[in-house]
Image (cartoon, rainbow, N blue to C red; front, top):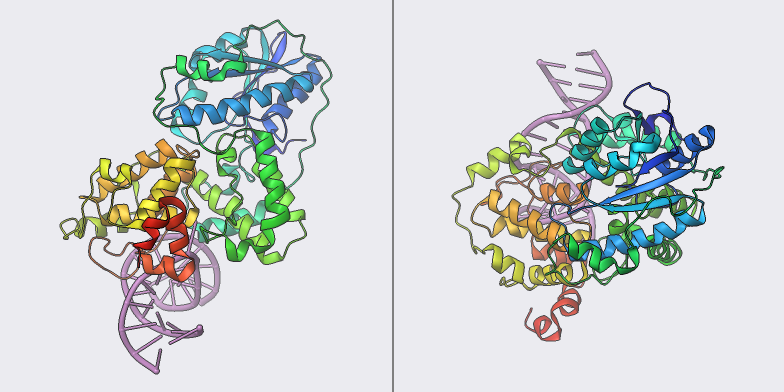
Length: 455
DNA sequence: ATCGGCTCGCGCAA
DNA sequence: TGCGCGAAGCCGAT
């Protein structure tokens, strides 16, 4: 049974006459632990109809070859897992507002999943307007549905935390897969072939200048990471999470970004693990409270990626320090090339460019230095977001947008006033040195020679 | 090594 | 209206 708060009905009409129930897969790109998919199957069973899963392949704003490789590897796997459950799958090229209404022509009901970015919301609004059958959206990529937590953009982690914790008992419940009563008869829908996925995204004309990331996409890779994390890393998480050399994080955020693994599944696995309470608490704080604070920020503030939506105190203090002398000023090209004077910053940039990820702790330092060494705070904000979205596998994500904005004061509080930052929280390399072996981090990403010149 | 102050606004108690 | 308190940091005092 899917909790009612996950299900957003657009109207009260009963299912139409149709040949199948259509699940339009977009955010939750997985065949298991997917509340939208299970809702579609339950509805199809009740109507004695098969379930078809449709996916619209289109140029996602800002996504490049690195992201498409990762996503399509996952989708190929998902297609196989869907088939094994007796579910149809149809991949079509084109924007959702064209592909989905076309697929829905013979559908009794359209079920969609929920995404929190503007482009995802716009797609859903356009699709809902253009299909004849009833439409429901099911929220499966938040542990606690965003609207059940709060009705406004929360000010900080401390204001959303008690609201989420109050509801965890209700929503931290396993999702049982529904048995498919009527299997989908193959061949009824013509679908693009995922076996040559590079050809698929190249046809969309997406940027091919960013090479593949080291991590492989897909639910199987995500579960290998989860198994490894729970078995070997979780117990030490509270201490090791903020050490970029220790490799103590789960590494799951790209998989969460593409919906290749469910946050609910991760949370239940971690909760049930034989690990110290401080460790599971620290991890669930990141996975649920911090992650869903970002979902809240995007949902209730559609200008989430704009500088001018930062809190008033942050805008004021940054403006007041607009003309402060910058010790260094770098251009977008210098930032992108990792060509600053600071080996720590260059190492973080190299980690991101080469692997498609950057350690959480370094993301903060990275953003703070962009603010410190750019001509203007607006320019720093734009550069940070653009580089994040281009190179991070989890770019163009609520967490990325909010993470960048955090460096400029979002969800934070004022601290001691200083040049350029005003009262925005400051970070420097001394802090890194206190916390971990900076030399080892720099050598890992820039080579031994760079580390040797450090201190 | 450890500790308090920094600075602002939320949220709850009166 | 007042006031406690935040919490992935820095910095200077002890």
